[in-house]
Image (cartoon, rainbow, N blue to C red; front, side, top):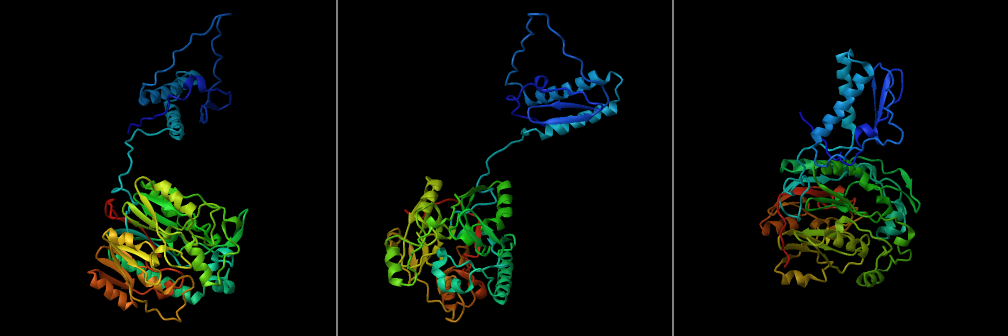
Length: 481
């Protein structure tokens, strides 16, 4: 097989770059940043020819940049053969000669050169990562893990769930509960595969280990909710910077997967990582008075400040060329602006808000389930809902959740019932215990795939949170005119 090596025109010529060193059984040929030694028996290279006094050596013309890479490879091989014949004489063993050529090829293979093979950008349809909305036919999905889940330490950024973290911060979640959650998610994965969806999982990590940065120290949390940290927009997968210190290194569980997608052609972007120093958080943010929180939320003030960009991916929801986002306890305006600049001009970012004193992740408040079809939480109504109605969208109010009051929900509300995963426009994964919302979907002509993840809900998410859709079969369209 013939290889064509490129980008050699900027390198010095081999004859000018090599240096011969006298060694008993080794000739060392030194190129600008590499060295190749071939074990042969010969004497040092003779001294170069001396020029007469005052006589300048003949200046060689610079090699043309138009010469082919094949010829340059041939020049390297010729030089190597000449060196060997010069140093060993005409009776040199041909087997040894072949070994030297093999060394030459091995050396050249290590040079930072490119093989002359067709290299093209991957079209979104061919890319392993491709999704434009929340409802196109789902082909591949990442499902989170509950294993080794830990309660975040009791610090200012987790004020939304203050009582729970005051009691359990830094400890593992109840082991029996986590064990049941693991079993539920395994069954969910089996059902997704049965429905024809490829399921991928993050790496298991020990989240109890403490880590320290120049600005804080913390233990980890989990890799249960890939929706929080990863968002796919077109053929690009974006890592969110996050806002909780306990989730600073959560990306590590997903890196093997993301690197695989990148090698197969996906675009991979990591948003600027915040330092998460004390300046990012309002240390005096009022958590106990609901009225104060309502007032501050209406003013766009939350526990996170505008010290540096931060956002969770779960505060964004996609509808083709339009992406909707809320300012929340974990997503600030600087983070939203970073996404706006990064995705423009192809995508438009729309900021919407809700009557919610503790906004955190949009998909249990406002969940787009089809072209021009959205579920809107009646307890947390959207302040800009009229613009969706004027655009011809159908706004559906989901029924009150049926989850019992005594069921532990450590980091979420009962409205996880509307946190559903669309497999396509006519199939939805929904909680097996929520009969009323099942009937609602059936009235909309959508078939329900019923799965029980009640114990997994306790860790902070429903089907949408527990997943990140990696690839959906569809094209970029505009649904919001």
